[in-house]
View (cartoon, rainbow, N blue to C red):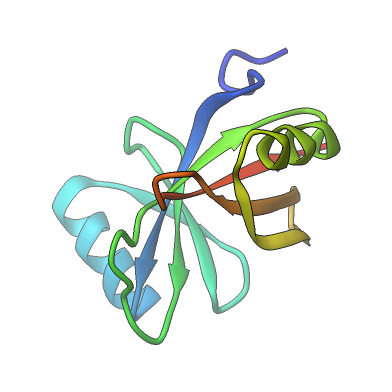
Length: 117
């Protein structure tokens, strides 16, 4: 297993963006990041020291950073979250490269778990 794809480890950071072109220009010009577009609503960023992406939103929400953990068995991860008091915020959905779900922890923090399986 690749070191960046270990179960239960933070694997990806997702940030919100009102305008993907503007945010790519800012981070590209300011920090030298590069990007991979996935339609007009999402892009990954590279050369940032951690894997991540920008999701296009209409309004930035408080705590707009989404911490994403990896797990090779999404069903098991979902069961573990629910069994231990987490609430599912967004059911499992597919995207280019895998699938994921989002949850709220007992303190109210929103995180996600994804898999490439």
